[in-house]
Structures are given as structure tokens and as C-alpha cells.
Image (cartoon, rainbow, N blue to C red; front, side, top):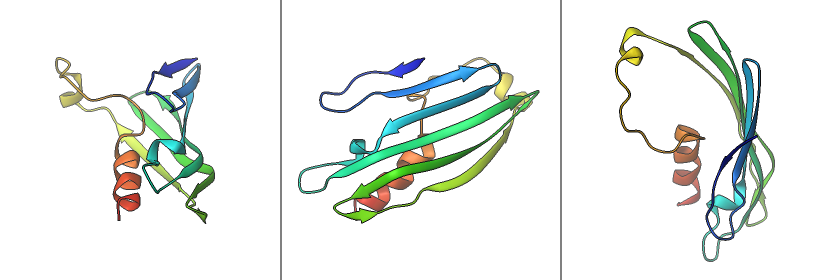
Length: 108
């Protein structure tokens, strides 16, 4: 079990890794703010094969202020020579671009 911890009042992001497959999920309450409440869960899954990773992202019962939001899509990535360079400082692992897109949508 993987865990990203912890903001007061926010359920941590959790996940599983089974061989080359993983699933990470987090509470949609992460997008709540005063006067704006979200519930449900967001998921990112994938499989690592050789130099690639393929997967999907989705939601389950994602609702903000009574409005149902469906999140779904896929992604693919390929490791390149540039990705084999010395590690650089990065932000938290997790939903990355998906988080930014949802944050942008809920800020409007």
C-alpha cells in the first residue's frame, strides 16, 4: 500500500502495486474549499511494460456542489534517454496534470 500523507481533514492518496500494475486513488474532497464541496474518488491506474507505461484515469461518484462530474481518459508514456539522466527535484507523485485540470475547472 502506497500512501501520501496528510493534510488535516483530507483523506490521503492511497494505492497498490502488483507486479507491473498499479492503482492510485484519492478523495475528491481535495478540491473542496469554503462554499464549494466535493465528494467521491479519483483513480489513476497503469501498467509498466519495458520502457513504457499505459493506463487510465477515472472517477467514482465525483460530485461538487450537487453537480456530478465524470472523469475518464487514458495516457501513455515512453521512457527516453533524457529520462535516464540524474534525478531532478520534482513535485509530489500522484495525479499531476489531472489534478491541475480539475483544480482549474473547479476554480471557475
